[in-house]
Length: 445
Image (cartoon, rainbow, N blue to C red; front, side, top):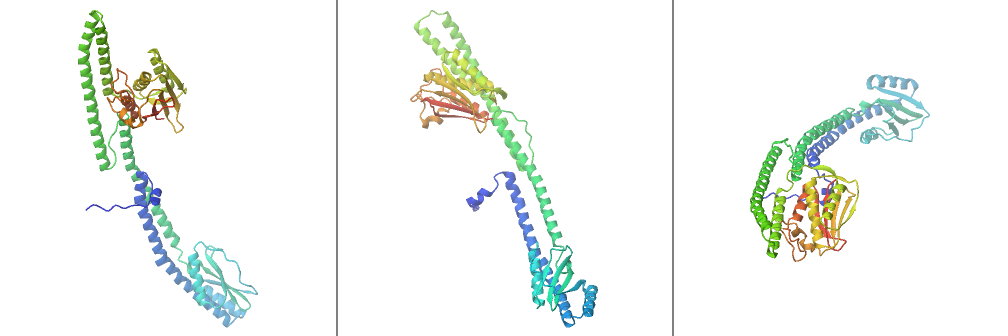
């Protein structure tokens, strides 16, 4: 039976962390925090407040006794005797302030609920107006009761009215929560780091690098890492076999082609001979493109290069071959790429534009978000938008909308996109401002 899916409201989903580290930490810390809050609430509700209420009731009873004793005999001698008895037996300091009135102001306490407990207890036990302050003195409570002729001022120890150990409990709860959270962060960070290493290795391998990666972390993460390593080795073997196969085929085909070229060079010139030489040149070019596509990035190392200088070199090579290419190049741009692979890809794009258009323009500019854009624009017939993805397929030839170079085999765009994506960028096609096709290479920063 499939498990029911728990749908999270979109508003709540936007508040949740997106990283594995954040979500793992939330899974561990949130239940601990809820438990700590529940325990603290239960402690306050079932213990601290109930104990405080009983202590407050006891103190209120003692104060009511003192007030009643004063009202029974308000003489100075009786007041002195009452004060001494209260000091010895109840730890209360009592003084009569003749002609005084009760204060009108009241400073709020940090624990208002505890003040309310004392207020209720005094309200229940006293008929006289009263006032108290729990904030002026750290260890005492100032309680004043209105009596005939003045005010009876009573100082009581704070622990006679409140359960004073509550803050210790809260402190321990906070320290325990912080300790558990710190331990959780350390363990989760260690596990997430293993996954990040795996992601970094996969990304590096996707760019054509051979990362030195060893499995780390929990058993499941190590299993995924071992599966990645096995997959990497299989892919590398497949690429090596494909490259070796095409290299072998290329070598085997070049031998008879060379013999044919020698025989035609020694033969008498004629119109058919020129056509045959053209066919041989096209076959040789096709073999070179097949091998270049199979070789891909061919183990070439990524280097930090001056992109503007590299593009100018490719344009100069195209111009030496008779092409007219406009340029808009921002100088001093550096990026990480494989120089030979990039030169081959850019040359393919320029040659494709030159073959199908009158104007070709190469633009190199930095992106505001980081990275560099290399655009090749032309004023040719272009490619319909619904055929852009099809144009990237190897050996694809869109003859009906954009006639290919007669030497082409439909690999130029595929090679260029593989180059860009191997660097962590991309190659996209769009309509050019010149009216034809724009091939935009987006390189990372």
